[in-house]
Image 1 (cartoon, one colour):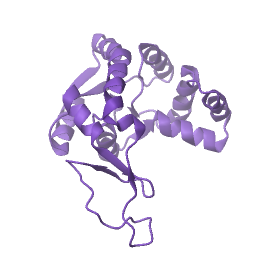
Image 2 (cartoon, helix red, strand yellow):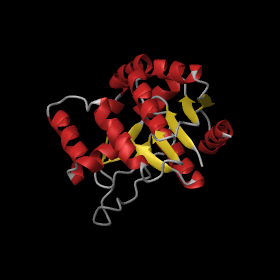
Image 3 (cartoon, one colour):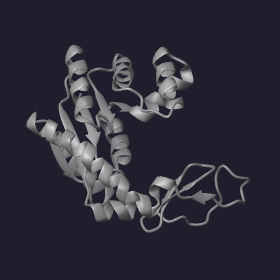
Image 4 (cartoon, helix red, strand yellow):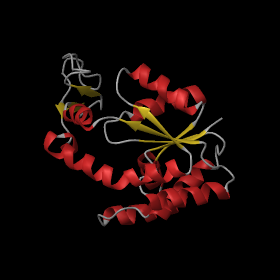
Length: 215
């Protein structure tokens, strides 16, 4: 079993790699966004606390997110994959203290590295169907015009581009990520846990590099 964290900039392919790692290594996949939504929907104490901050337009406090992760790890502390967390050094420190308390420290932190121009191309060309939620890309996975599976059988997908995927906003997202998360890479590098993986090329190639980094 392995205890891993996976991070990288928007558009680096974290979700795709996380799904394959989860399946191949039998890991508990912990994406903080999913945890937040599940706890809020269930009306748990942590979910209610998170909702209070979300409704006020603020960020969910780190201690609330850490609490959700701790509860989830009670299910499988010896094999998990944190997806996109931690994003700040303060979160990394709080996460480390919590995992030490559970006697389940991280084995490795995988960083998917992709050049800025490639990230801009990936993000700026992404389109999503409002009905079925499928994601398409202008160059790597273009929509073929087929009927939407959630429509009446004849309607095409209703494609739209998220505001944060529009070319004019992508640069700001990447700058914010670099400023916020680059120190996290340095934090784990100094701890000897960082494994930097080239996130460019075919998906299978990236996955093999990721597996090799874990080994």
